[in-house]
Image (tube, rainbow, N blue to C red; front, top):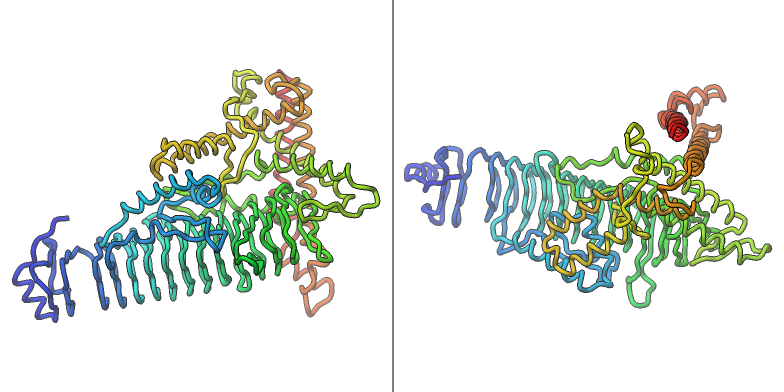
Length: 629
């Protein structure tokens, strides 16, 4: 934009309007400048006045570049003092309150890069290279002039110091902000509301921070909702998280971490796709060397009302923790489990959460609840419930249970494993349930290969080929993204060798790995098939393939029927307690149906039955295809 020095007649007009200036020659305006619109302003230092902005009742405004169509109204102070990086490069203490796992935050941070920084502390060279990249980026953000992006609005707020505002940010009633960046754009505006106090922070696009939330040393990712007096300290919340009423201290809240209750404290732990029941609590302090312990709840975990866990402990994926656990345990090798407390013992029931309606609903709703409207999405998400990482856990968990059963005597009620107790009589049953899920997974992956090319002229053997260079025995869940260990370790070595030199290049590398996910996961599955059938996947007989498809079909239908049976409990007579409170059983039933509906008319039930029919139809189609070749 072109600026000119303010004209003498405009200076006279401004003086008549109650304005003063330290030096009128330092005021720069556009050709369309209208001095009649400016009243009772004291100009200090170099001033550049743009078009189409409204600034009213701002007591102190200093060192900001204000873009077009900005509204600033009733603000105590809005200033930049000295050089600042606007929150970029700030270190926050995750997982360990005593330090050692600091996360250096910046406005383009992803959950995957954060996971590397926080969990790979055994590799000091890697951490040094990563922090060097972030520092280089943060230095580019350093300035003594802030920005209020076009279309932004800041109203009725208190003291705002050293904060950068991208386009279309909306702030109203904010109490105090200092040292931070509020990323925002027209596609995905960020909203900061009444009584919010934040210090040393990054807030990415599409997020909403409202209703007296308190943030201190925090990172807030895309599409996050924080409000209702929620208190956050030294924590990171990645995309689509929600935090209301309670408190978070030193947590790594991976994508879709949700806590809604006043009495919930999340402390010194890592979560993702997590739901905290009311009163969920953890302890990281053994009253010895301080609050140094940490907990890991893998993706899809839940904690029941007033649950308690003593860190260090680890919970397997898609598991539920109920009760108060005063001993440390490691259940990471047993996904889809229940972990209860009984007579002071932590009881593990593996695989039982496979059959609950809540688990299935969660896996279906997460993809539809991605609130990110920004064209650039920083966190990479994979939603597959069955995948190489989870299935490998099931295989290992099954092996462990078989070994425990072999070693247990018949008079044992429980067997012990890593701080947990498992009923001996359940070991064989739970192993069968894992096998059921493994067969579903293998069939699903095989059908993907065949269905995509069922009308192709390529032979079946060609469809089942896999790139051996993509095979990796081990996989990991990197804060929402499944990555093979081979790719992950290759990425680490590239960083250490300085083949990746910037955070943008690192983000592109993660994106490139994600694009290989389908082929890499097929390579793992194909190898699993080969081990199970003792045959190359391209040399499987028609009988082998038929068995895989039949196993997939039968077990998928069985799993859906078990989930439907669990859902039906929501419509039984016990669920009707409290309905029709002034009537007889007939009134109770009518009241229940009018409020909750009928089992057969429930949309989840309808969809699951539809899915079972599609499984049957697809199974027949694939089997017919196999019979033709």
